[in-house]
Length: 207
Image 1 (tube, rainbow, N blue to C red):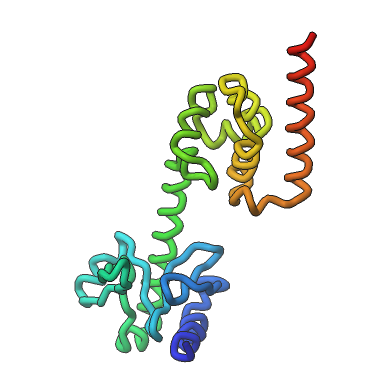
Image 2: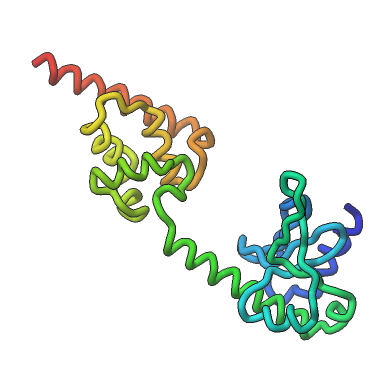
């Protein structure tokens, strides 16, 4: 733990030009990120850079060691590579490589966001994605534009047994969080809207 913390501080000092470096627990070690974009990991007192296409030739040439972690009893290699002592001593080279790794991680995030499907959002399963597509909501942008309530009403028109849990799931997906993590005020407002909607439906059926 102490070795990792000292390595984190060392990385923050040497790579300060990249911006404010954030740290959080990940893969049994610590991730290093700038503006929430992870570009390196610290594990067992060693710094590992996140590989990208631009630095792959350097990784091969220097024979940098990959980071391994154990999954279900089997060692798995991650696309992170150890910074050895000679590279630590080449401050300019280390900074340049780290900057490339950060840029590569940012580009990958943009690609993932562009290719993201409804099912990739919190709470949304493949089945719910299919149901949304059937009612004309086929993209994340359409879901956000129409909102949870309108999308729920569209789904409800095809399924009278649709529950309030789906409404919570849609609201959470739009907010980018698990439905259980929605603010209580939001849940209360949705419950009231849900009850009023059912009440109006029942009234229409009687008239």
